[in-house]
Length: 126
Image (cartoon, rainbow, N blue to C red):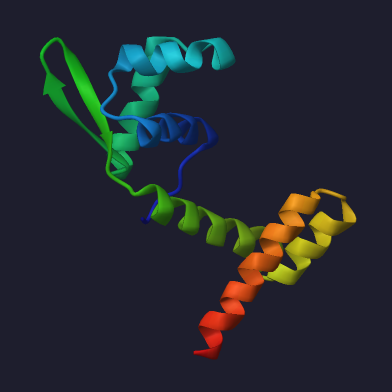
């Protein structure tokens, strides 16, 4: 994945990752209440996303059917790396310390992080 998604494009990608194919009308209905977007806004975003290669469409009778091209896992990993490099210069410790200092981690989050660290230790020990 070479290009990044805007926040608005992310909203539509999440819909397509959850369920696809979707039509313009289905996507507009799904986001209209939260965003106020009309079908013309959705069409504009979809056009940009197709230009980036993130999605594709097929003619489906009276409506175009849209599908994600980019895999969710790859896109999330790429965006996460970009964010960490941009904000924390790749320093994961600084990110975690910032979250701890802001009391942004719940006990469940801390337990999940501990499990992830243990798993990483096991994988690197092999």
